Length: 373
Ligand code: CA
Image (tube, rainbow, N blue to C red; front, side, top):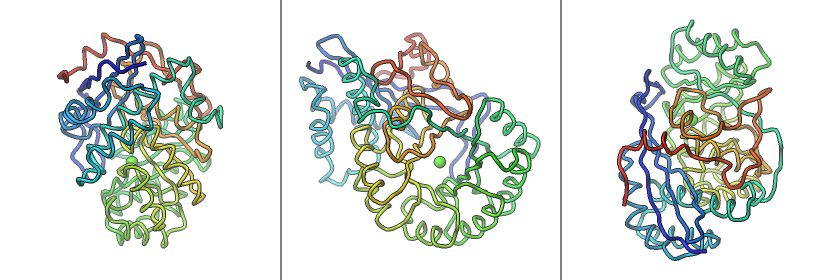
Protein backbone atom coordinates (compact mmCIF):
# COMPACT_ATOMS: atom_id res chain seq x y z
CA UNK A 1 0.00 0.00 0.00
CA UNK A 2 1.31 3.43 -0.95
CA UNK A 3 0.40 6.96 0.12
CA UNK A 4 -0.80 8.95 -2.89
CA UNK A 5 -2.12 12.20 -1.44
CA UNK A 6 -1.82 14.23 1.76
CA UNK A 7 -4.17 17.14 2.33
CA UNK A 8 -4.84 19.48 5.25
CA UNK A 9 -8.39 20.81 5.64
CA UNK A 10 -8.71 23.91 7.81
CA UNK A 11 -12.02 24.11 9.66
CA UNK A 12 -13.68 26.93 11.54
CA UNK A 13 -17.07 27.23 13.23
CA UNK A 14 -18.50 30.37 14.81
CA UNK A 15 -19.63 30.11 18.41
CA UNK A 16 -22.92 31.75 19.36
CA UNK A 17 -21.57 32.49 22.83
CA UNK A 18 -17.82 33.13 23.46
CA UNK A 19 -16.10 30.52 25.64
CA UNK A 20 -14.14 32.11 28.48
CA UNK A 21 -11.17 30.54 30.23
CA UNK A 22 -8.28 31.99 32.26
CA UNK A 23 -5.02 33.13 30.73
CA UNK A 24 -6.13 33.64 27.10
CA UNK A 25 -8.73 35.73 25.26
CA UNK A 26 -12.18 34.11 24.91
CA UNK A 27 -12.79 31.60 22.12
CA UNK A 28 -15.23 33.19 19.63
CA UNK A 29 -14.67 30.44 17.04
CA UNK A 30 -13.58 26.82 17.22
CA UNK A 31 -10.88 25.73 14.78
CA UNK A 32 -9.36 22.37 13.87
CA UNK A 33 -7.17 21.14 11.05
CA UNK A 34 -7.97 17.74 9.60
CA UNK A 35 -5.34 15.73 7.73
CA UNK A 36 -6.62 13.44 5.02
CA UNK A 37 -4.28 10.81 3.58
CA UNK A 38 -5.22 8.79 0.49
CA UNK A 39 -3.67 5.50 -0.62
CA UNK A 40 -3.41 3.64 -3.93
CA UNK A 41 -5.75 0.95 -2.54
CA UNK A 42 -8.62 3.40 -2.12
CA UNK A 43 -8.40 3.48 1.68
CA UNK A 44 -8.33 6.97 3.21
CA UNK A 45 -7.41 8.00 6.73
CA UNK A 46 -8.26 11.11 8.70
CA UNK A 47 -6.40 12.76 11.56
CA UNK A 48 -6.64 16.00 13.51
CA UNK A 49 -4.14 18.70 14.33
CA UNK A 50 -5.00 20.83 17.36
CA UNK A 51 -5.45 24.52 16.44
CA UNK A 52 -5.20 27.30 18.99
CA UNK A 53 -4.10 30.00 16.53
CA UNK A 54 -2.87 30.35 12.94
CA UNK A 55 -4.17 27.13 11.31
CA UNK A 56 -2.01 28.06 8.29
CA UNK A 57 1.13 27.27 10.33
CA UNK A 58 0.55 23.52 10.59
CA UNK A 59 -1.06 23.41 7.13
CA UNK A 60 2.23 24.74 5.70
CA UNK A 61 4.31 22.26 7.73
CA UNK A 62 2.27 19.31 6.44
CA UNK A 63 2.43 20.55 2.83
CA UNK A 64 6.09 21.55 2.65
CA UNK A 65 7.91 19.30 5.17
CA UNK A 66 5.81 16.19 5.93
CA UNK A 67 4.07 15.46 2.63
CA UNK A 68 7.34 14.86 0.68
CA UNK A 69 8.35 12.30 3.35
CA UNK A 70 4.98 10.53 3.11
CA UNK A 71 4.23 10.31 -0.62
CA UNK A 72 5.06 6.85 -1.96
CA UNK A 73 5.55 5.37 1.54
CA UNK A 74 3.60 2.50 3.10
CA UNK A 75 1.25 3.73 5.89
CA UNK A 76 1.99 0.52 7.85
CA UNK A 77 5.53 1.90 8.34
CA UNK A 78 3.96 4.44 10.68
CA UNK A 79 6.70 4.47 13.35
CA UNK A 80 9.47 4.76 10.75
CA UNK A 81 7.55 7.64 9.15
CA UNK A 82 7.13 9.27 12.59
CA UNK A 83 10.91 9.15 13.11
CA UNK A 84 11.53 10.60 9.65
CA UNK A 85 9.04 13.43 10.22
CA UNK A 86 10.48 14.19 13.68
CA UNK A 87 14.12 14.11 12.58
CA UNK A 88 13.36 16.40 9.62
CA UNK A 89 13.44 19.39 12.00
CA UNK A 90 14.21 18.21 15.56
CA UNK A 91 17.94 18.84 15.40
CA UNK A 92 17.22 22.33 14.06
CA UNK A 93 15.36 23.45 17.14
CA UNK A 94 11.81 22.38 16.20
CA UNK A 95 11.10 19.48 18.54
CA UNK A 96 7.97 21.01 20.11
CA UNK A 97 5.06 23.22 19.10
CA UNK A 98 3.54 23.48 15.62
CA UNK A 99 5.91 20.86 14.17
CA UNK A 100 4.76 18.13 16.57
CA UNK A 101 1.13 19.19 16.26
CA UNK A 102 1.38 18.68 12.48
CA UNK A 103 3.03 15.26 12.95
CA UNK A 104 0.21 14.31 15.37
CA UNK A 105 -2.47 14.81 12.71
CA UNK A 106 -0.52 12.78 10.15
CA UNK A 107 0.14 9.96 12.63
CA UNK A 108 -3.57 9.70 13.53
CA UNK A 109 -4.51 9.54 9.83
CA UNK A 110 -1.91 6.80 9.19
CA UNK A 111 -3.31 4.71 12.06
CA UNK A 112 -6.84 5.26 10.74
CA UNK A 113 -5.70 3.78 7.40
CA UNK A 114 -4.11 0.80 9.18
CA UNK A 115 -7.36 0.23 11.12
CA UNK A 116 -9.50 0.40 8.00
CA UNK A 117 -7.12 -1.86 6.03
CA UNK A 118 -7.18 -4.52 8.76
CA UNK A 119 -10.87 -3.87 9.55
CA UNK A 120 -10.05 -3.43 13.25
CA UNK A 121 -10.79 -0.61 15.69
CA UNK A 122 -7.60 1.17 16.69
CA UNK A 123 -7.74 0.15 20.35
CA UNK A 124 -7.24 -3.46 19.19
CA UNK A 125 -4.16 -2.47 17.20
CA UNK A 126 -2.75 -0.32 20.00
CA UNK A 127 -2.49 -3.31 22.33
CA UNK A 128 -6.10 -4.38 22.86
CA UNK A 129 -8.92 -3.10 25.00
CA UNK A 130 -8.05 -2.49 28.65
CA UNK A 131 -11.49 -1.33 29.72
CA UNK A 132 -14.94 -1.40 28.13
CA UNK A 133 -16.45 1.44 30.16
CA UNK A 134 -14.39 4.63 29.97
CA UNK A 135 -15.28 7.05 32.73
CA UNK A 136 -15.72 10.56 31.31
CA UNK A 137 -15.98 14.03 32.77
CA UNK A 138 -17.72 17.07 31.32
CA UNK A 139 -15.63 20.06 30.22
CA UNK A 140 -16.42 22.57 31.49
CA UNK A 141 -18.10 24.91 33.92
CA UNK A 142 -16.77 28.30 32.80
CA UNK A 143 -16.86 31.78 34.32
CA UNK A 144 -20.53 32.60 34.73
CA UNK A 145 -22.69 33.99 37.50
CA UNK A 146 -23.83 31.66 40.26
CA UNK A 147 -27.21 30.87 38.73
CA UNK A 148 -25.75 30.02 35.31
CA UNK A 149 -23.01 27.90 36.90
CA UNK A 150 -25.59 25.82 38.77
CA UNK A 151 -27.67 25.50 35.60
CA UNK A 152 -24.64 24.17 33.67
CA UNK A 153 -23.77 21.72 36.46
CA UNK A 154 -27.35 20.42 36.39
CA UNK A 155 -27.22 20.12 32.61
CA UNK A 156 -24.07 17.95 32.85
CA UNK A 157 -25.79 15.68 35.39
CA UNK A 158 -28.80 15.41 33.06
CA UNK A 159 -26.39 14.38 30.27
CA UNK A 160 -25.47 11.45 32.57
CA UNK A 161 -22.03 12.71 33.61
CA UNK A 162 -20.88 11.87 37.13
CA UNK A 163 -17.82 14.12 36.92
CA UNK A 164 -17.22 17.64 35.64
CA UNK A 165 -14.51 20.28 35.47
CA UNK A 166 -14.66 23.82 36.82
CA UNK A 167 -12.55 26.50 35.18
CA UNK A 168 -10.61 28.61 37.69
CA UNK A 169 -7.65 30.99 37.51
CA UNK A 170 -9.40 34.33 37.69
CA UNK A 171 -8.47 35.15 41.29
CA UNK A 172 -8.68 33.34 44.64
CA UNK A 173 -12.00 34.87 45.74
CA UNK A 174 -13.94 34.00 42.56
CA UNK A 175 -12.38 30.52 42.35
CA UNK A 176 -13.24 29.54 45.91
CA UNK A 177 -16.77 30.93 45.65
CA UNK A 178 -17.41 29.07 42.38
CA UNK A 179 -16.02 25.82 43.78
CA UNK A 180 -18.31 26.11 46.82
CA UNK A 181 -21.31 26.86 44.59
CA UNK A 182 -20.67 23.83 42.38
CA UNK A 183 -20.03 21.50 45.32
CA UNK A 184 -23.25 22.57 47.04
CA UNK A 185 -25.17 22.11 43.78
CA UNK A 186 -23.93 18.63 42.76
CA UNK A 187 -23.41 17.04 46.20
CA UNK A 188 -20.42 15.10 47.51
CA UNK A 189 -20.50 12.09 45.17
CA UNK A 190 -19.80 13.94 41.89
CA UNK A 191 -16.13 14.43 40.98
CA UNK A 192 -15.26 18.08 40.42
CA UNK A 193 -11.93 18.71 38.72
CA UNK A 194 -10.50 22.25 38.61
CA UNK A 195 -8.46 23.80 35.79
CA UNK A 196 -6.54 27.08 36.11
CA UNK A 197 -5.41 27.08 32.44
CA UNK A 198 -1.92 28.23 33.49
CA UNK A 199 -3.42 31.38 34.99
CA UNK A 200 -1.41 31.50 38.24
CA UNK A 201 2.08 31.68 39.63
CA UNK A 202 3.02 28.98 42.15
CA UNK A 203 2.30 31.09 45.26
CA UNK A 204 -1.22 31.97 44.16
CA UNK A 205 -1.92 28.44 42.92
CA UNK A 206 -0.99 27.06 46.34
CA UNK A 207 -3.18 29.62 48.12
CA UNK A 208 -6.19 28.78 45.91
CA UNK A 209 -5.43 25.06 45.90
CA UNK A 210 -5.45 24.80 49.72
CA UNK A 211 -8.92 26.34 49.84
CA UNK A 212 -10.52 24.40 47.01
CA UNK A 213 -9.16 21.05 48.14
CA UNK A 214 -11.18 21.59 51.33
CA UNK A 215 -14.27 21.64 49.07
CA UNK A 216 -13.23 18.27 47.68
CA UNK A 217 -11.71 19.35 44.35
CA UNK A 218 -10.60 16.14 42.63
CA UNK A 219 -7.51 17.63 40.97
CA UNK A 220 -5.85 20.95 40.16
CA UNK A 221 -5.01 21.18 36.45
CA UNK A 222 -2.42 23.48 34.86
CA UNK A 223 -1.90 25.62 37.98
CA UNK A 224 1.06 27.48 36.40
CA UNK A 225 2.43 27.98 32.85
CA UNK A 226 3.73 24.79 31.19
CA UNK A 227 7.34 26.07 31.07
CA UNK A 228 7.40 26.68 34.85
CA UNK A 229 8.30 23.14 35.90
CA UNK A 230 9.75 24.31 39.26
CA UNK A 231 6.41 26.05 39.90
CA UNK A 232 4.59 22.76 39.24
CA UNK A 233 6.92 20.97 41.66
CA UNK A 234 6.24 23.55 44.42
CA UNK A 235 2.47 23.36 43.92
CA UNK A 236 2.50 19.57 43.91
CA UNK A 237 4.53 19.44 47.15
CA UNK A 238 2.29 21.96 48.94
CA UNK A 239 -1.09 20.40 48.12
CA UNK A 240 -2.79 17.15 49.11
CA UNK A 241 -4.88 16.89 45.94
CA UNK A 242 -3.29 15.67 42.71
CA UNK A 243 -1.81 18.12 40.21
CA UNK A 244 -2.70 17.37 36.57
CA UNK A 245 -0.92 18.71 33.49
CA UNK A 246 0.66 18.01 30.13
CA UNK A 247 -1.89 19.22 27.55
CA UNK A 248 0.71 21.77 26.40
CA UNK A 249 3.62 19.31 26.37
CA UNK A 250 5.03 17.38 23.42
CA UNK A 251 6.56 13.94 22.79
CA UNK A 252 8.18 11.50 25.21
CA UNK A 253 11.09 13.92 25.52
CA UNK A 254 8.93 16.74 26.89
CA UNK A 255 7.02 14.38 29.18
CA UNK A 256 10.30 12.87 30.41
CA UNK A 257 11.18 16.25 31.92
CA UNK A 258 7.70 16.87 33.33
CA UNK A 259 7.46 13.40 34.88
CA UNK A 260 11.03 12.81 36.08
CA UNK A 261 11.16 16.18 37.85
CA UNK A 262 8.00 15.33 39.80
CA UNK A 263 5.84 18.07 38.28
CA UNK A 264 2.55 16.16 37.93
CA UNK A 265 0.47 13.40 39.53
CA UNK A 266 -1.72 12.90 36.42
CA UNK A 267 -0.53 13.18 32.79
CA UNK A 268 -2.79 14.74 30.16
CA UNK A 269 -1.21 14.36 26.70
CA UNK A 270 -3.45 15.42 23.81
CA UNK A 271 -3.24 12.89 20.95
CA UNK A 272 -3.76 15.72 18.40
CA UNK A 273 -0.82 17.68 19.81
CA UNK A 274 1.72 15.53 21.69
CA UNK A 275 2.65 13.36 18.68
CA UNK A 276 -0.32 11.17 17.70
CA UNK A 277 -1.01 7.55 18.73
CA UNK A 278 2.58 6.38 18.10
CA UNK A 279 4.00 8.93 20.50
CA UNK A 280 1.27 9.05 23.16
CA UNK A 281 1.64 5.27 23.56
CA UNK A 282 5.30 5.87 24.47
CA UNK A 283 4.41 8.78 26.78
CA UNK A 284 1.95 6.50 28.60
CA UNK A 285 4.58 3.79 29.02
CA UNK A 286 6.86 6.41 30.57
CA UNK A 287 4.06 7.56 32.89
CA UNK A 288 3.35 3.96 33.84
CA UNK A 289 6.99 3.49 34.86
CA UNK A 290 6.42 6.33 37.36
CA UNK A 291 3.02 4.90 38.38
CA UNK A 292 1.12 7.92 37.04
CA UNK A 293 -2.38 7.75 35.55
CA UNK A 294 -3.46 9.13 32.16
CA UNK A 295 -6.40 11.51 31.74
CA UNK A 296 -6.59 12.38 28.00
CA UNK A 297 -6.85 16.06 27.11
CA UNK A 298 -9.65 16.26 24.53
CA UNK A 299 -10.95 19.60 23.32
CA UNK A 300 -11.24 19.49 19.55
CA UNK A 301 -13.44 18.24 16.73
CA UNK A 302 -15.15 14.84 16.46
CA UNK A 303 -11.86 13.41 15.14
CA UNK A 304 -10.04 14.40 18.35
CA UNK A 305 -12.82 12.85 20.45
CA UNK A 306 -12.78 9.61 18.41
CA UNK A 307 -8.97 9.40 18.64
CA UNK A 308 -8.95 10.14 22.39
CA UNK A 309 -11.49 7.34 22.97
CA UNK A 310 -9.33 4.83 21.05
CA UNK A 311 -6.21 5.87 22.99
CA UNK A 312 -8.06 5.73 26.34
CA UNK A 313 -9.55 2.29 25.66
CA UNK A 314 -6.10 0.79 25.07
CA UNK A 315 -4.25 2.56 27.91
CA UNK A 316 -3.36 0.45 30.97
CA UNK A 317 -3.08 3.57 33.14
CA UNK A 318 -6.27 5.27 31.92
CA UNK A 319 -8.03 7.29 34.64
CA UNK A 320 -10.78 9.45 33.16
CA UNK A 321 -11.57 10.95 29.73
CA UNK A 322 -12.13 14.65 29.15
CA UNK A 323 -15.38 15.05 27.18
CA UNK A 324 -16.02 18.49 25.73
CA UNK A 325 -19.65 19.26 26.55
CA UNK A 326 -19.59 22.88 25.37
CA UNK A 327 -21.26 23.71 22.05
CA UNK A 328 -18.87 22.98 19.16
CA UNK A 329 -20.26 22.41 15.64
CA UNK A 330 -16.99 20.70 14.65
CA UNK A 331 -17.72 17.98 17.19
CA UNK A 332 -21.50 17.88 16.78
CA UNK A 333 -21.93 18.13 12.99
CA UNK A 334 -18.87 16.38 11.47
CA UNK A 335 -19.72 12.71 12.22
CA UNK A 336 -21.94 11.00 9.62
CA UNK A 337 -23.14 8.66 12.37
CA UNK A 338 -23.43 9.60 16.07
CA UNK A 339 -20.34 9.36 18.26
CA UNK A 340 -20.45 7.37 21.51
CA UNK A 341 -22.56 9.14 24.12
CA UNK A 342 -22.13 9.21 27.86
CA UNK A 343 -24.17 6.59 29.74
CA UNK A 344 -23.93 6.29 33.53
CA UNK A 345 -20.88 8.54 33.48
CA UNK A 346 -18.95 6.48 30.88
CA UNK A 347 -18.44 6.01 27.14
CA UNK A 348 -17.56 2.88 25.15
CA UNK A 349 -15.15 2.70 22.21
CA UNK A 350 -17.09 1.91 19.01
CA UNK A 351 -16.39 -1.44 17.27
CA UNK A 352 -16.01 0.11 13.76
CA UNK A 353 -12.56 -0.03 12.07
CA UNK A 354 -9.90 2.66 12.53
CA UNK A 355 -11.07 5.70 14.48
CA UNK A 356 -14.63 4.40 14.26
CA UNK A 357 -15.70 7.62 12.62
CA UNK A 358 -17.18 8.47 9.22
CA UNK A 359 -17.13 12.15 8.20
CA UNK A 360 -20.20 13.94 6.84
CA UNK A 361 -18.79 15.52 3.67
CA UNK A 362 -21.45 18.25 3.52
CA UNK A 363 -20.65 19.36 7.06
CA UNK A 364 -16.93 19.24 6.26
CA UNK A 365 -17.43 21.49 3.23
CA UNK A 366 -19.58 23.86 5.28
CA UNK A 367 -16.84 24.50 7.84
CA UNK A 368 -13.82 24.43 5.52
CA UNK A 369 -12.10 27.84 5.50
CA UNK A 370 -9.33 27.18 3.00
CA UNK A 371 -7.84 24.17 1.30
CA UNK A 372 -4.19 23.19 1.50
CA UNK A 373 -2.48 21.83 -1.60
CA1 CA B 1 -7.14 22.09 30.47
